[in-house]
Structures are given as C-alpha cells and as structure tokens.
Image (cartoon, rainbow, N blue to C red):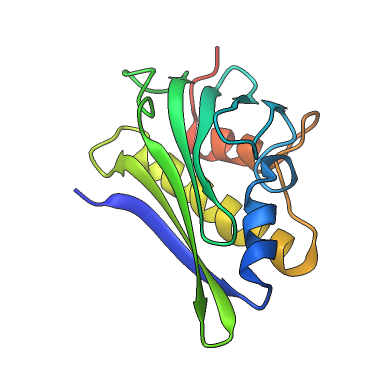
Length: 163
C-alpha cells in the first residue's frame, strides 16, 4: 500500500519553504509544545482529546529536507489508538523550473489504516490550504489553540469519537 503523499509548487525559495515547514505553529496547529525546528528535539501536537502525538525532528537538511518521526500517538476515534506511532513525516524540497517543489509524504500512513480517510483530508487541507499560503504569502491557517478551526470541522464531518 502506498503512503499518503501530496505535492505543490511555490514561487518562494527552497530555504524559505524549509523555514516555513519547520514552523509547525504557523501552519499546522497553534497547540504545539516544544521546538519543531531543532534536530533531535521532540515536540507535542494536540487537538483536544481527539489527537495527541509526540514527534522528533530526525533529519534536517536546510533547503532540501525535513523528516519527523512520530514517537508516540493517540487517536480517540480508532481501535488502534497508536496508529501513527513509528511513522514519519517527510518534506522534500527541490528546485523545479525556477520555482520550488515541496513534496510531503506521511510514511506509514496507508489506506489500510483506520484513520486514513480522515487523515488524508486533514493533511490535504493543512498542506494545501495552510502550509502553501504560509510559504507563499506568510500567512497560514493553523488550527487555533482556542476556538474552532479545521479540526473541529473534521471531527463534526466524520463524527469522530471524542473523550
């Protein structure tokens, strides 16, 4: 089974794209604790009691690649609560016709996973509707720490079990 993957092209430089990707609070979620841009460091992502995960930046090649390993994970809505555990978030950055191509692959997230449809929709939204505009224009749409954002819409749409 193939891993979830998506790509976009930006007019910004590879280094600008790299720096934006490493700043998860400005495109994924404001509710992140820890450093997201220092190799070896861990950080925590949380959306209420629906999704919690601990990630570590394991490879950082400025302007080219960022890879994060999911060290631990909890979903309230899947039988296997740790479904993402030991998967990786890989961002590859390459030059293409005077522009910058950003490829995101969630290695270990496949159609066999119970969360795949929900995660596919969520990643597609955050990558294309938040990370891309953050890189391109400096303004993303991360899930807010307080209030309702895209994650609230996903929970409602998919009728996800919350604790």
